[in-house]
Length: 155
Length: 423
Image 1 (cartoon, chains in turn yellow, red):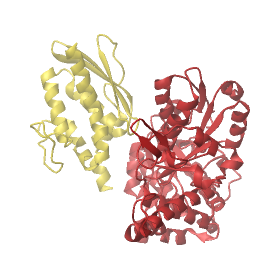
Image 2 (cartoon, chains in turn purple, brown; image 1 turned 60 degrees about the vertical axis):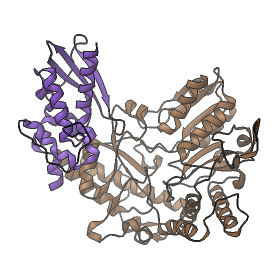
Image 3 (cartoon, rainbow over the protein chains, first blue to last red; image 1 turned 135 degrees about the horizontal axis):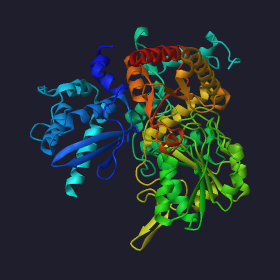
Image 4 (tube, helix red, strand yellow; image 1 turned 90 degrees about the vertical axis):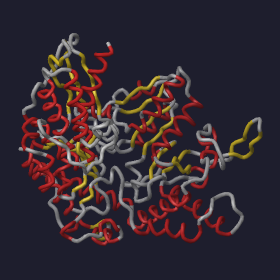
């Protein structure tokens, strides 16, 4: 099951079985953003509380497969306490890793190598790129967070 | 489940034709024995035999021309083949007037949209009511919701119970004042075979028309619209060994006459003036533009293939596989795998939706694919039903005439691998 082990790295399974920052935050002060994958029915609710230009707190609700849940779990640990600018950059870099964007924002070459320096646990999700159908699972929480932050900033 | 029969080699034939022989007709299964394609997703789309592919190829290679237009010989031949497919399909489902009552569409979804826009728009007002069931595919929900947005009316739903069986306790009250009862003949998630004849009788005594979604029924069971008392029925070709891009609406002649045209354009008119148009006669009134001719011919060939095997034989074969799969799952996995829908295999069509404890259906399907076992994971285009089941997705295995107990065995082994992987 070499292919599968690329997809389901141990750290992914760990985040799936022991999800971090799962639950809800009171709205307001937090904002709740709901994301759906219409193809499979996965849904994620990202509760994000923004203050002083930072992600003060974040929790994840909803349900989904191991890839979307572990991606959401890792996302929460990666963005909590970071500034909005840092989170924006991380979302962009995650999409680059998922072969969805080039560093200049254009569409990516799926075979390109991506620098995983300082990407921490998130690098484990790189194997998803080989399973195109699952890319949407991995990016669902990120797109939802992105949208949620934009809505909060737009007031 | 103590009364389930034990597997024997006799499971592996459909009527008196062995599954191995049947598989030889399907090019996609032409693989080395150690690389067998375990295709358990015919509920989403079936595979097709070479007879169907060859019929379409032959048409394109020898007689392609547009239908209902040319006076030259190959155009006449194209028209003859297209119309012959219509009659063959109509006879296959027991249509009393196949040449006038079969409307070719893109798929069952388009057929149901034609019903909502052609019939619904004609007979419903904002004060009307229609009745659907909670187990409908989006194809028999959303067209009605769209029409409701346009003209407004009430949509009522027949619920189903914990066994996935329609609860008809309140049927008379639900049907009171309703104009249409829309029901799937076999639930695409639960596998339930619905009591269509009973529902048709109840609908008729309440003055409602019975609209049946036959997408999962027509490919798998003998279907006779007249005996079942159906008024309109949608079907699709690609789930019954035919090509994609072709389906049909069957409806009683009087209903088709009453219905408004849905798509306008060439072929569906009798006359066009700058001041207006007169529609063509049925069924052409509903077939605007150049139709999928090769696809219709392919579907006609698929019907011939299915008739050759026998629909009762196919239904029996599905039943044997479902019963065997349910027995093996219970034996091997106990309560760690839940099977949705009727627990009595006799009440089911040839499909099973399962939920494995601790393993999301997507992950399950991904691991199964590693063993060349193809099952569908997702909401199966039935989100209201999934919500009622309390799940976001299920994994569904569906069987057809080219599957056998070896496929079920492969499924069981792959399920065990998945369970071990995520343990």
